[in-house]
Length: 190
Image (cartoon, rainbow, N blue to C red):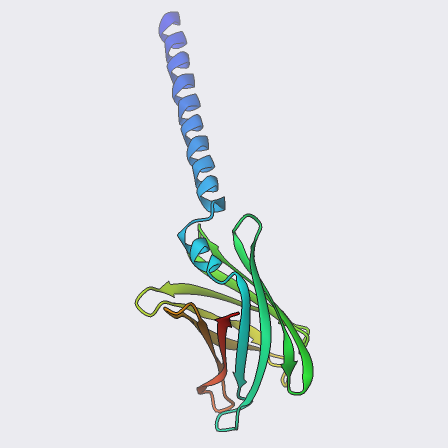
């Protein structure tokens, strides 16, 4: 009986230890997959470089748009994991500066984007998915409406054109509750 108990303890220890090792190996592999840049990061890296940026901006539906031009400088950072962009130009007769950070979360399988600029003090945060047929990232998120101080829904479609240019279209919600196109940004490589 004593030999049976010792054999049982030995087998139990081996099974537990090998199962634990396999779980640790599996967890390590998941972490490695999470941290390793892949195809979506390579796609974002096409945005690296210096760009001419033309922005068309509508304050409300039916109003005449304002148009401005700027320069964007984008680079992949942190080992090719994120696309960092800095924009400078003029908007509404004032100097304009803005920054974005875009990435793709390998575990969650979504794109993430933040935006800040000198026309406000908030941070816009959006998440999105890739639409292969349209060659677009379709983002949805929130930003502060400076008029009310409340969070409002926003949507962006970023189209990657075959000529290397991109077009970002942003949609806001009008006071009547209907969505309207509030901004269009076309970026062409310098």
